[in-house]
Length: 494
Image (cartoon, rainbow, N blue to C red; front, side, top):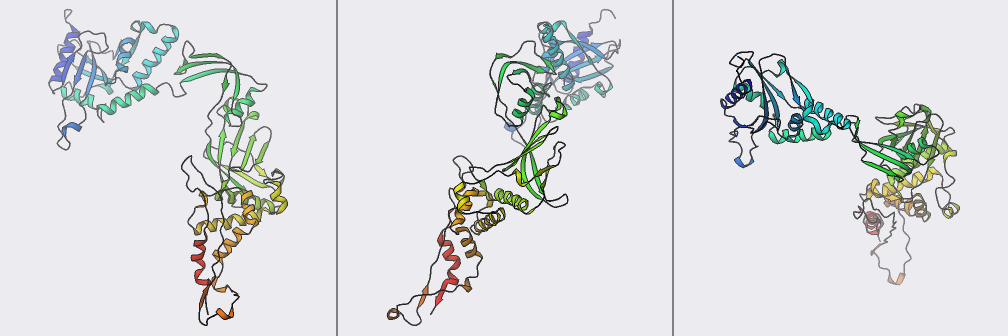
């Protein structure tokens, strides 16, 4: 019994199992690479597809461990494990128990999967920080096995099925998933950690404002950055700089603002962006701050202090739909004796106090002074003008989302009654039109027909939604449309 070569006995048994089911086995010449055998599966016969597009057959690397003991564990060097987890091919430990007999009594197949990969990578990162990463062959990890890993019987068929169980979608998909695992394990909380000293009399305020998009950048005094995996920082920093500028790309959440006259009214709903600072969980509650922004409204909520509301026009113009909703809010506010209630709706909305909007929150003027002085409009009147403009656009199959216009332009157009006149022409009763003609009697012929052609047009706004890809360069309601629409009612017979 003492003269038995247990290692050779196990390798011979493993090769026998493979050959019995047609698996090709290649022995490693030197056991320094973490595996003993490269096993190749035969091509699968599949008459449904041409040979040139069939998936590659399975290949895997296997390290065989033979034992007479039933301790169900084996110490494996980190250097070997590092190779097995980094190879793109499937890798396995095959534990063959002889229990003092000449024939194998049980075979266990342990897949080098997520659990072993994660444990190996984490231990290597720990040794890296200890300065021992160059001595992985001196450190070992316990690889355990049990009933869940035991083959149904000691046959080549069970061995083959055990390998195939871990590659159900083929070799290419397995390699893709394993590479993805290696790239993401341990980075669930990010790949880097930076220590930054900023130039500020109130660092918390400035950092919050930066993450909420209220400011573009912050001056840095010093910055140090470390690679991080499994929460363990690299021993040496990846960056170490004095000075610099800190800026962030802020990504808001989708939300809605609902303006209501009272608690139970349906309200007017506007799409909005919700900005929440990722640093909120690290600061005291009284300093927590978030931002809600729609096309015209912006609310800055500081939980421990106040709620600031601002309303601003947009110089580049707004869509008719956005403008309609905005003016509807102001029209309701104009008629209401109390401030409007403002509710925030979002899937990840923070606990938000009740917000309000009152007339005192409105800026002194949205428009150019010359326009206001020449013609004064209340909010209800402007809302009516937008509704008329939308109806005009619908008649010529233009979406209200595709028209950009400023409130100043809307007032300017209506100064000459273009919008109301076009609206009335579209919705008027053409048969009720009375036409008066000045007739030169000497040229008049009884029974002759005459037609009066009347048209109006209005240039609403240029549109450019995306660079170099304008949906509509200009919207001009041309008189030919109105001639066609009104022709029947304007044709007079004598």
